Image (tube, rainbow, N blue to C red):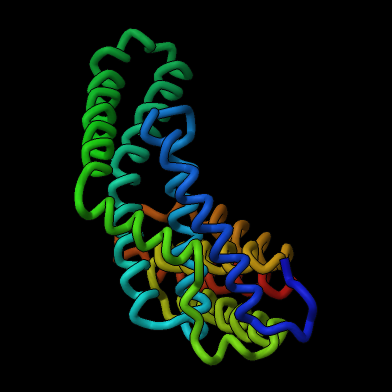
Length: 242
């Protein structure tokens, strides 16, 4: 989705952001119906839109973008509550099957499923709230016209190159400075989403690979950061310099 090399970045962003907004809007109904994987897909769409807005923050109007990102963050947290319980229930069910103790499902899995049901009910109720209406209105406005900054008149190829280089350095800086693997992983996810949006498959694949490699460490506490710092940086640099 790169467009003509000398076309303005605004044309690219209008298409990219418009598509992501449409993904969020069309993903709501399946998620509210609790269709398989629908909440996860909607949460991913919300994250992609937030990350693209963050990555191209200099090329969209600051105030509207700040409001959109804040509302999407709240929405994403609401979606995450139910999704996390769903994943925990799936993991628990799988481990019990591996151990041959499916008899414990009633005690261990059923409470998680019940909590997931409550979280989904809260999600459905939220969609009848003023906050949900405000987000829907905002998404509709952005879907019709993306509020672009003056910088969006610059050439798309130069803008995307600068943004992607910044995202790469952002991942490496977090790894080199000893931030937690969770923070490095989030930076890698943002790189992946921004690269995906503009069709840079290599950087998107690198971001995805870093996410996967650091996934096992995401729940480690701060005291283990120094143990992970050097390996994280080396892994990130190796993958990003392929």
